[in-house]
Length: 64
Image 1 (spheres, rainbow, N blue to C red):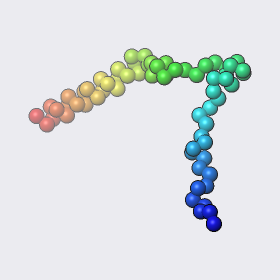
Image 2: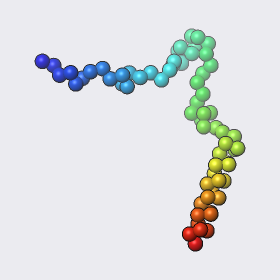
Image 3: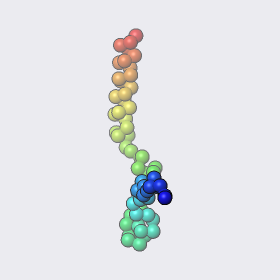
């Protein structure tokens, strides 16, 4: 008899969404590139970085 351990594993068949041929056929805009998705205005990263710098400076002063 054959073992049942080799069952269907849906994670191996997971689709991430429509591909470029579907977009071309249906007139949907192209998906943003990786560079575009990480491009953020300075206000999105400057405030958290400045906050982290202040916390690190305060910690260094407290430990000194």
